[in-house]
Amino acid sequence: MTPASPWTTRPAPRRLSTADIAARCATPAFGEVLTEHMVSLRWSAGDGWHAGEVLPHAPIAMDPAMVGLHYGQVVFEGLKAYHQPDGSVAAFRPEDHARRFRRSAARLAMPELPEELFLESLAALVDVDRAWVPAADTRSLYLRPILYATDASLALRPAREYRYLLLALVTENFFGAGSPPVSVWAGTGYSRAARGGTGEAKCAGNYAGGFLAQAEAAEHGCQQVVWLDAAEHRLVEEMGGMNIFFVVDGALVTPPLSGTLLPGVTRESVLTLAARAGLAVREQPVPLADVLAGCADGTITEAFACGTAAVVTPIGRVVTEEGEWRVGDGATGPVTGRLRAHLVDLHLGRAPDPDGWRYRL
Ligand code: COI
Image 1: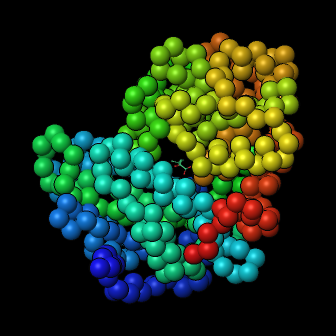
Image 2: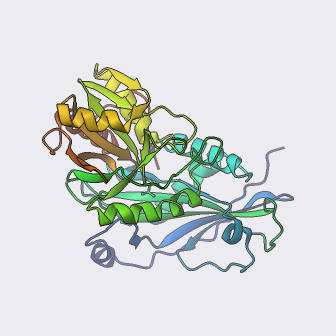
């Protein structure tokens, strides 16, 4: 027997005119310009996934004793959708984001949203908010799925009821149009994730735990913090909201997925594109001391951040308590520039897509 569809069909009317949408999107700093609708699905042990709806984006009711609020049972994703030359809209690697969302949920003892519901939710939201998908090259529609525990109970156990929401926002590149080189702070004494912890899950608490270090980065004139391993504070792991790569003697090097860092979908895309372009690619431990020495003696010629929000953003300067090091000449290097261009061409439907990464919505 086919299971009943979890979706209800109440239409969510569009409210804003094209001119109003354009006005709202005049300067879309990351996170600030949300679209008009959201998708909602609920899960309970008895009913599984149900009550799927497209709703106006609006505040949600929640019980103050909600498990997600008190014990942090919250996971999320971030992926982007882009206008294509034929007028359609395509999400980038949504199946991979769906899989990571499931893994994150499993790590936090939450129910896993089936991949087809994840994809259906994207299609439902883009369908009603299509007018919000920006046409400009450096802008995109950022999709933010989130799953949180809704039980009104302070019992210290996994919740029995959950809500999935999908929001969308219009965004410029995370670090601004043109993706200028950023400076990174590698001097924090805080740690992001220890072995056996939740570092490889995209859970809300990982980000809250990073805010103080991120504030330190800003005090040192940097846009991002570089996290080092929690045991010895010796090995580079990732950054506040993205993965990190170096160009060392012409090879592309990034820390391995040790369980403490986020397995970025963009990270994996960059590794694939670089290897296909004939670059030597190595996933290996990266001691911070080697990064600083490599910047000083010129063996490290480039470094960049990569993630859904950041795409590929050059790193021009590394700062620690001991001093600061310029990476290469501090500008966007050729490897970074080529990888970024290839990735953006794939996003925008300007490059062939042999891996089927674009998913039409
Ligand atoms: C993304 O790149 O999508 C992220 O989730 C990081 C963001 C919170 C800055």
